[in-house]
Image 1 (cartoon, rainbow over the protein chains, first blue to last red):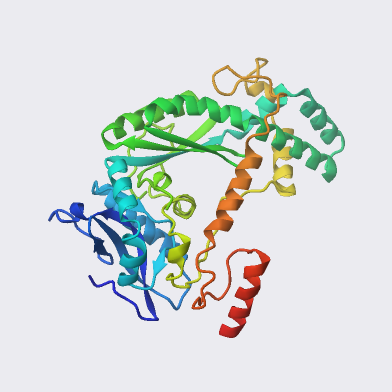
Image 2: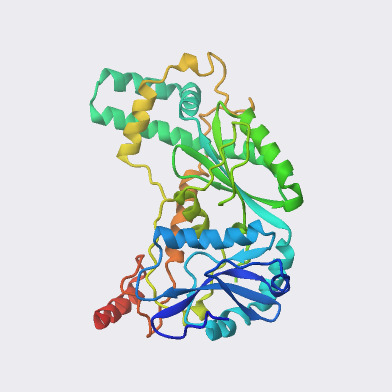
Length: 248
Length: 150
């Protein structure tokens, strides 16, 4: 255990929590700049971070992602911390984080063992959704006609754009429900978060058994193909179960 | 998220490596949050967060969509049929649904504000500037602390 800190110029950055038993195998290799702090059945995956600078540069974010991904790629279930968890030292980590929450961590690790997260990001094909809202609401066509008649007059253009964006926002929930219905059977747990960006539809977070990962990815390809005229699907993962960790 | 891209057959977009924005959305938004009691022993490193997630429609957005609408040729998108997008079960778009973007934004904002609350009420805090606005009472005491520190 080199990640001790408890000095003023260094601190311990916590990436996530794993089951101690999984670390005992000789097959497990930690990334170079990473260490573990054990407390009974659970262990924190940590690194050292300087306290004299701001945390959150692109490299910091990449590092967090890279360390978590290392465990996912090696088939080790990890409960990821939200980015930015820093404690003063290993002792503090054990006393204030690992011991009080040991039961919750162990339960969650058991619960999530063997699962990965996929995030499915769905964006509208812009011209397709524009055509859909224009056809659904004749008032938009009227607004467009007046905007055209007004030429480059800004107010008319803003009114048109505002009405179109409102119409897209109004249909987003229904469109998301439809996709959610198709994703539902593919995931053990599924969460939908509607987007606030007019070009995007929603993010779906899916908890999938590792054993079903290939089937999930193949099914996603089919869904993407089926809706290619209306939406662009982006698949992120397999990821650690960021979305499904317990609230402490 | 650094997995190699598998051959996906073309329709499904699978960025590899993931763009920074994708990474940020996942790791800033979700994951275990150490509870308030523990924050006492957190180090006051200033956390820079890039909030790429909250998009509040602006005049620029409206102008962009107006421009796209103006050059849209409706007859190239679905002909004269019903405004179908996802499989033909669509209801009239005139039935407005208020759930959606608005509540989504609210959730995001409350999460974003919550995620900045790392190390308050701690006399040892060395954070030099709060990343988020806070309730007036604690931001007052924080401000005094900062002035003492600087």
